[in-house]
Picture: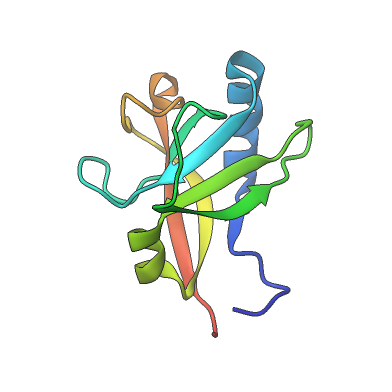
Length: 119
């Protein structure tokens, strides 16, 4: 991946939802495990609520206009190995996601769109 290409991007819909969630829950973070249940949907939590460790990779600190602090985007190392040559685009779609992710009560869910990039 070229150094000028961001590894993770937000759509305008995702940024707007993050601003609304930030107003209610405070600073935010994403974690994407690629596990069961919601598959590869990114999960949004209050910053620090999901404990990260040696089995996780910090892919990005996302700047969102109107928010004072960045939103960290973490991914499990095993998932990162599979997705290492992709640019991840965080978007929002209608429908219920995981009950653990902050957007669940909103009737929408975060979704990853991806695009292959050169190594």
